[in-house]
Amino acid sequence: MSRRRRVYEGKAKIMYEGPEPGTLVQYFKDDATAFNNQKKGVITGKGVLNNRISEYLFLRLAEIGIPTHLVRRLNMREQLVREVEVFPLEVVVRNVAAGSFTQRFGVAEGTALPRSIVEYYYKNDELGDPMVTEEHITAFGWAAPPDLDDILSLALRINDFLAGLFLGVNLRLVDFKLEFGRLWENEEMRIVLCDEISPDSCRLWDMQTNEKMDKDRFRRDLGGVAEAYQEVARRLGIMPEAGPRDLKGPATLQ
Ligand code: TMP
Image (cartoon, rainbow, N blue to C red; front, top):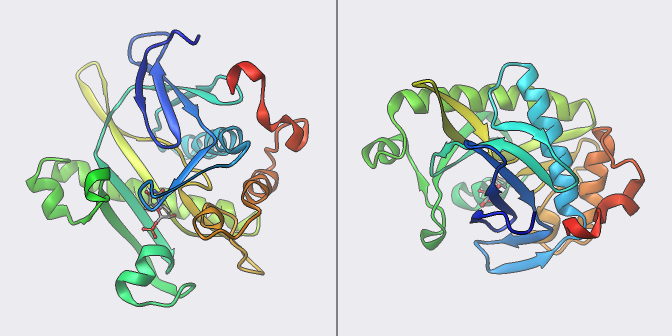
């Protein structure tokens, strides 16, 4: 298994060549970064939790007809996924002002937005993932106008569904980031959800206390990072069988 070809290594995940053509293995690391790699750390057990949380959310989304790259979870830290042509875009959906939005527009953190707002960022670490408009995206050819129509409607459907799902476990879905790719099947192209949805890529606040239950605990040194990710998994009913002790997984998969 260690001799598999590494196709791509990102900040929180590694993509390996999959067992069949057109597949990849997505490996979730415990590494955490923030502010475009300026802050680095390790959150023990994060990879295991994000693998489970993201699998759970992708399966629920597939049930309501959102196409995703997920084939199945393989083990504690890995998923088998379809290989897709990833759009170089981060699609952010916001329901409540937080993070870069509060700074950019001078809106206080926690302000409910008049409606959900979708933003696009160009995925490019050297440039610090600049915010872009549909004009930039179509002019530079990162996605075509019909692709963007599909991406926007998928992002809004995902937001409606996930906001309700998290509300059901007493969490406010403040904002989150999605990635999409093109999947080719017999000359037919479909746009599918890829990457992950986890406390790394979402802001989740406790409904009553507004306590942050996501990567902002790491970004802002609030402590209790792993515990917050565990609590999200627990509320979703997917805590690993043996509880937190089970989080490190077999040594061979570390
Ligand atoms: P932002 O407020 O920093 O722009 O982040 C918006 C949402 O996107 C938040 O839920 C965190 C997520 N996000 C990522 O998943 N990756 C990133 O690189 C950034 C900047 C944000």
